[in-house]
Image 1: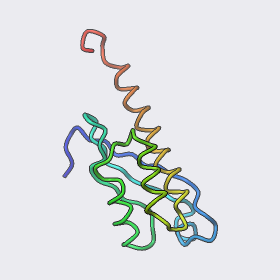
Image 2: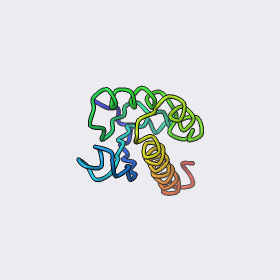
Image 3: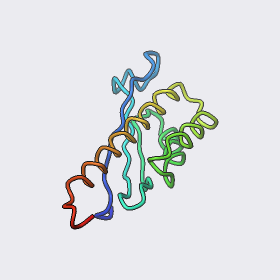
Image 4: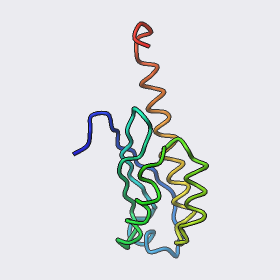
Length: 115
C-alpha cells in the first residue's frame, strides 16, 4: 500500500480533560506516513472521535512537509477550531522531531563513502 521510501511516525500530546478524545484514548495521537525522499506527508490519521475531524485533520496535513512546523502550525491555528487544537499542534511537532531524529540517524549510519 505504501512505497518503500516511506516511514510511519506517531506524534502524541495530552488533550484537554473535557475532550472526548481524552475520555476514550487518554491522549491525542496523530499517525503520519512520510516520504523520506522529500519529507512530504502522504497519509495521516488521528485519534479523534468524529470521522469528520479525522478527515479534516488529514486534509490539513497531507501534501505538506513534516519539516515545515511553522506553516502547518499556522494552518491548524487558522482553520481547526476543535477543542484539541493545541494537542494537534503539539502532536505534530512531536512527530516532526521524531522524523528529524530518524533522518539524522539514518544519515549518520551511512558510510562516508556513500554520502
